[in-house]
Length: 230
Image 1 (cartoon, one colour):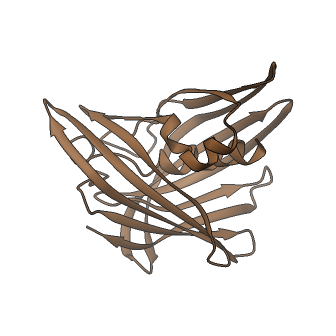
Image 2 (cartoon, helix red, strand yellow; image 1 turned 90 degrees about the vertical axis):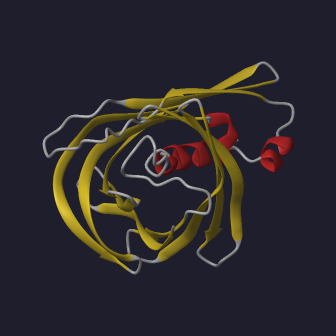
Image 3 (spheres, rainbow, N blue to C red; image 1 turned 135 degrees about the vertical axis):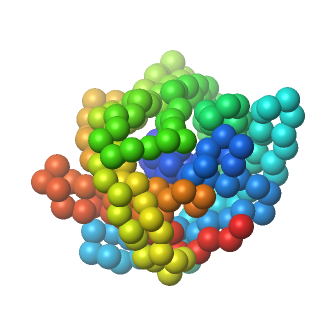
């Protein structure tokens, strides 16, 4: 159960910063075949794993786009840690994420006697960003019921704002980015934790860089876009 909670937390934060569609957002081209590779680092700069994303299906009908994103995550030793597909619906300039599809079927089969409910408010990123702009909060909640015992977990993303513009260079190229700040508050049972974070967002590419911090401001983990293909 702890594994499910950790995956939900990480995927909510990561997926919601890299998912949109080109008819809805100028920041994220979401045509079939688009792929991104992200390398994850710990506080000492050591590689902790690699996350690969690819749009495997995208259809348009009546102003609504439905897309399927395939995720594959490996750990620091190159061993497969997580794979799944998740679904997106894009209407206007708002992307809706199917939270339940984030959890892989093989993992759910291991917990077949559980009843899991997932709900939330999606992260929105407007087409027109400006420095100093405040953005809407977002959240996701999960309830697990098993043998009469309930477990609840929530993640709230608050105090979202556009801090500045900054150029970032990675192995995937050099990108002009907006820097978005937020505070991610997670609650698992009786444990509450708050992790400030920043996301570097480039037009036509999506997330280029992400950092999560301790309360004292030290970097706790980071992610870089290391490959990108349209």
